[in-house]
Image (cartoon, rainbow, N blue to C red; front, side, top):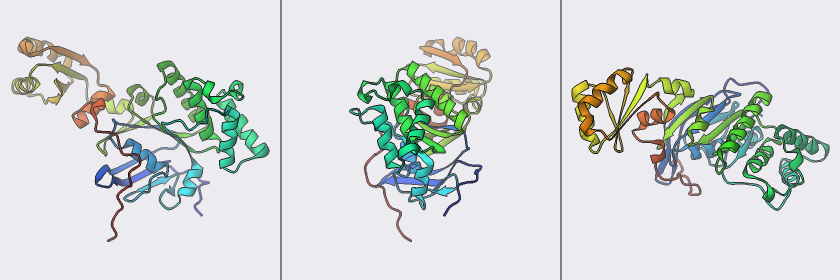
Length: 330
């Protein structure tokens, strides 16, 4: 039996992971590491592969090419042990709205084999951590979206997992509730050392992560802290709107010898000389410009620079129920 009592230097190790649904390849040779105690974000548009990677980490899909380890445990060989180490909250709610908060937690505990004083102690602990004490007797259908998310988290935490996997945790929540949810996640990380992995397409959520993996069309296009990713672009980003962006891009390259990138009807440029360059661009190409934006790089800019398109312009949603393509035996 695998020993999980020690503290590995890596909470999750993904090595050369690929996955396909029949003829649709949705992950392509992805490798990344997640450190213990980190809040790690999988950032990408629909169809980027982040949801499939999430399902593979959560032992929902079989690993057919590559490998994932969770605290040193091979997910393909010991999915049963991995499920003891992880708590999972999906984008779709898993609560029974006709039961009270306490009843939902009791049934979750029974699924893990807990009962009696042990289960009561576990419920008391998660309820105290997530400030749900005054909601235990309330029907879930009567709760606000924010409190339902807390109950979802409480269910995930009953068996005291070392790793928490959250799929688009802020879906449907207003900004104030989303901020409160992220404070709760930060408190969990700080108080219990829980490693947290979230999938998201929201930039403000991504900024709250310690490290990010940017995914696009099944490929890992960048990893690093939000600050490191932004600084990789240099000083400033210029976005120039034009009715003929292809012509504008050619003219800028001919005149200034600066690399440009076409993103829809916008010409993007990265330059440490942004503030000095802007007046020259306006003077030279005023008749070709419809808008000009000069700003420090954002995570959106990083994604555009790595992929050539915006985060909200990804492919179609990843398959969720189709059978995976099995690797042929050699």
